[in-house]
Length: 97
Image (tube, rainbow, N blue to C red; front, side):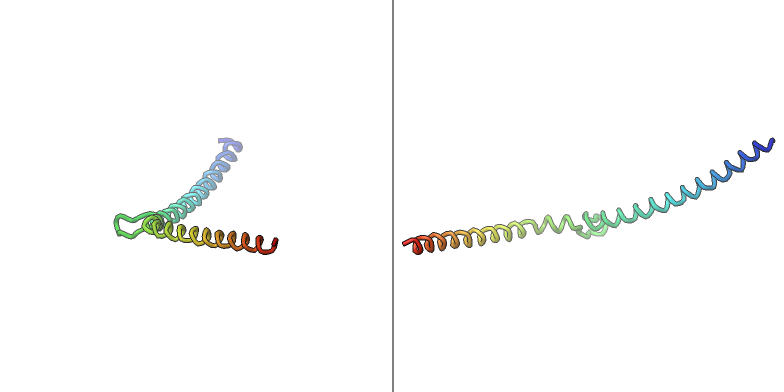
């Protein structure tokens, strides 16, 4: 084994060491991402094992109520707009005479 072969072997050992460290860091990062995504999925969707409802299930069950509230809001805005239009028409006719 020549000196050049020894140098290449030492370089290869260091490269393997750095690669193992990088793989270890990547595994840790993937585990963290997996844990976070699992927690998000548990909060968003219904959990069949525990029966806990997720945010999407709660929103879906309250959708009708939100729609009714939106309809009431639109009706109130329409009534206020109509009253404002009538008041403006009356004021315009009274001021022009």
